[in-house]
Length: 65
Image 1 (spheres, rainbow, N blue to C red):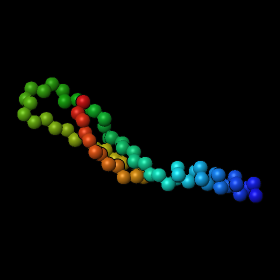
Image 2: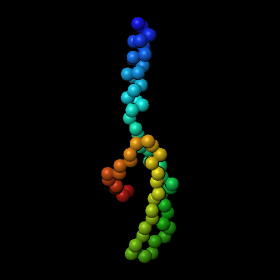
Image 3: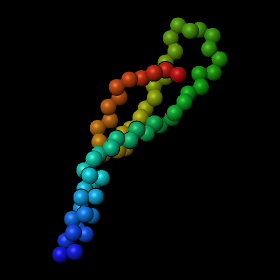
Image 4: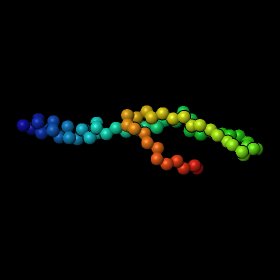
């Protein structure tokens, strides 16, 4: 009887941790140096990233620093 309680408590403790999937964003590079900029018409750079987690990665808002 005691062993069943231990098993049940262990299951209830670890089950939520197993069920929740988590996204994990990993950037190829985290910054970019544009050097000396003389013409400010258009400056662009693409940051490539990958979702290494097992959940859906949702980007809701971007804020430039």
